[in-house]
Image (cartoon, rainbow, N blue to C red; front, top):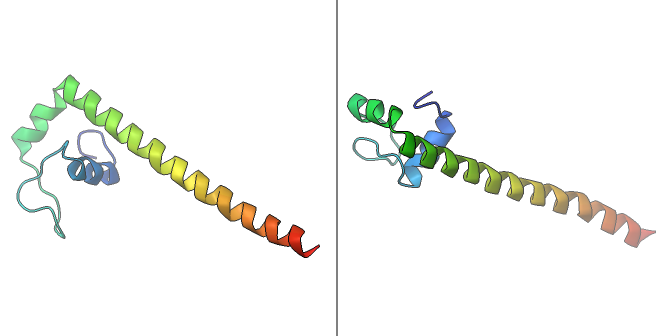
Length: 84
């Protein structure tokens, strides 16, 4: 875990511009300067911003998943009642 975040969250933080890796970010393993990571570990404002962004990302993703599941469960019921 980097900075206390799950690896999937690290990719989100990079994609959203909150965390900057070294070099190119497409189709390669992400690398970070040790001094940069240590500085971020002690920056409470950055940690709060990153944590809030990750939480919002998970809320949005989970809401979309719930919506898809609800739509999937509604379709079979609608077709079975139409056939009755």
